Amino acid sequence: MNYWYLWFIIIICVLLPAARARKLRQARIARKNRIKRQKGDHIMNELIKNYIDKEVIVYTSSSSGVTGTVTKIEDNWVELEDKNSHKQIVNTDYVSRIQEYPRNKKGKKKLVVT
Image (cartoon, rainbow, N blue to C red; front, side):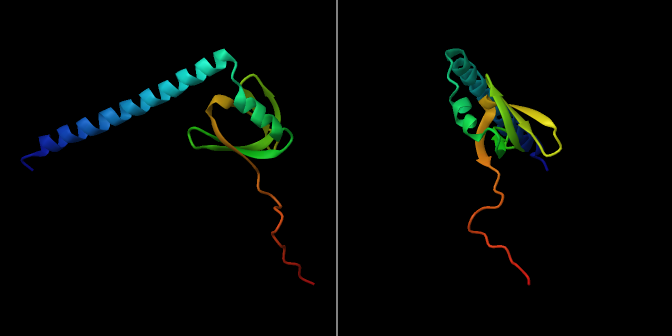
């Protein structure tokens, strides 16, 4: 335990730069998205238009998933409505993945008891 201060210094030298690097990476992504928006690049909007009136799962950059039916898309925002008619709005700059909700897929057989 004579060298506790060395461990403290090592932890500070590793954890603080890692946290700062994450914030810098998020700021860089936000800046890049802002530049794209100013240029008029709305590639994600065009892709999401294919999913209007379909139930989807939208994954954002923070790895959270939002489930709902795509009702409309304007500018850089997607409006999703869930089963209980609650509406959510998601910024398309932070959408990393969109997937049609896997319900009643073909190929799955249901067990029928007679």
